[in-house]
Length: 399
Ligand code: ADP
Ligand code: MG
Image 1 (cartoon, protein in one colour):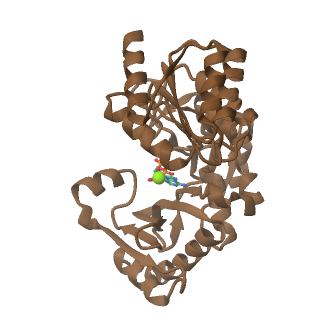
Image 2: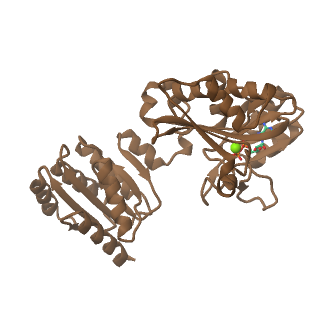
Image 3: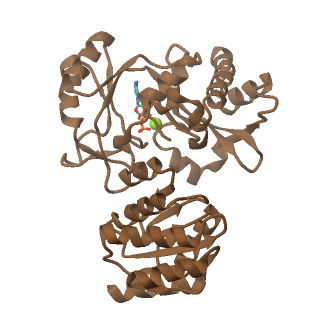
């Protein structure tokens, strides 16, 4: 789960991390009064969307010369004017995709005196089972270029969760950022704060870009992007409360209500599968036969008919879906439950695209019988490969 920059900064501040003062604003009036409270003389008006690259982003409907999603201004009146221009407008960045994201809230922040920008992130490294710390002296809006062109300027080291942060890690960070004196000291103090926030809140990723040194030698977190491990959200009601559903795919929100593991993708073949491994294999084989999956969907082991109906409805509601592949290997999940769910869902919402069903395992004969007797226009498949080939062919024929 992702949160906004201003929320991430508030979470980090709880752990003592230095962040600039600021207030969230949903209207131009709120933006102006936030600026008044801050006092100035420099304000930054920052679009809050769940995507990075805002500074270099472009607003739809404003010319190519218009300013991006992060604007530095010098008066309360200019804060209001920029807020009026930005709120409700779609911001396109290299992370939003071409559709962009509508800006529904702003963060009005005090302007910082930037002497240097650094990059710093913490993430779970599955290979080493440790927390990876990634740091670079080349922070700011061009970090992607740095990664491509001068990868040696990015330093990575690891913290073992069994022993936590040691003083030498702090030194390692200061060295990686090329810091000396008071700034090195502040880097050493910052790392355990960020690490504690990361672990205590079950973050999956914490990216600070930029971390800055100010003209008067203070180290400040100027941008923060945080995502949380969804499997651990049950123990963080405070984090769940930060959720902004306007930033999420409505299909994914619907799926989460039914406890379905669903991720929307850009392809044309909707998949309904049980088990994450089989779901991955199904997506792979669709690609192998030259098409793209429209989603990842694991209906789970013990799904009842209601869950299957919900899953089928979510798939068919996606206008990109040009064909559906149901691929079930019944173990705990029974094929007859799937068949009943599919039949009931089609009766309710209709079926406008080809449907291939491959059933195997527990109660397979009963499942096939339910589908055959339903009168549904279903293409039966014998195995995974057969099913994938048939749905790809059916979608091609339909074009
Ligand atoms: P994004 O990463 O989405 O582009 P950032 O928050 O990193 O957004 O802002 C982009 C750039 O804007 C930063 O690299 C920094 O140079 C500048 N900036 C951001 N916040 C401030 C601030 N409070 N004061 C001064 N400059 C800022
Ligand atoms: Mg940034």
